Amino acid sequence: MRTPIFPILITSILLLAGDLYSQEAAKGKPVETEGEVHSDLKSLDKEYYEYYFKTLPNTDIIEKEKLEYNLIRSLKFELRKVEPEKMNPEELKKVNSRSVRYERVFEDSIWMRGIRKQMGHLRFKDYMYVIVYDKYYCFISYEMNPSRYIQTPFQVQLIFKRDNNYNSTLPQP
Image (cartoon, rainbow, N blue to C red; front, side, top):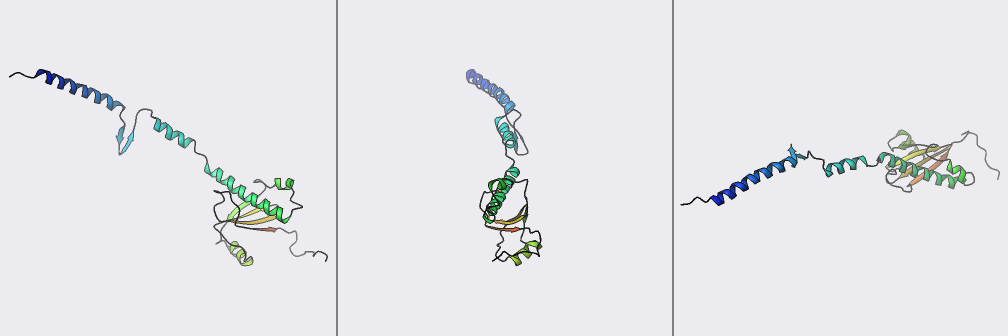
């Protein structure tokens, strides 16, 4: 019986070619370590990942700007309503983030509990702020987070700092 040389020759060539091809493919193949796949080569997915995190905006700055915008806009609106003759456009331009002070207040504060007793009409919400400009104190409450959304306030209460609390003159009848 004759030995089939041709099929043996073809099989050995295919096996050798397969081994060489698998060694070359393993050089560029990602390395798997502890369930994670990493590539030794410079890949576009890694470049995309790094670029994404380099270009993320700083959300703290954006949120602070939105909060200041909401607070200052509400304060200006109240100042125009209460003192329209004094609050002309030039005076309102002076009301900016450098000329005001503001702070978030909470309903469990001893001072806010006292205000609630004195001013029963105030409705406390999750987002409440006190903003101060010159002699004006303003309590502003929002239904949603004002550092995330530009919105109108839920409630605003403006009070004035007086020169003398005990001596007040009544207007002439």
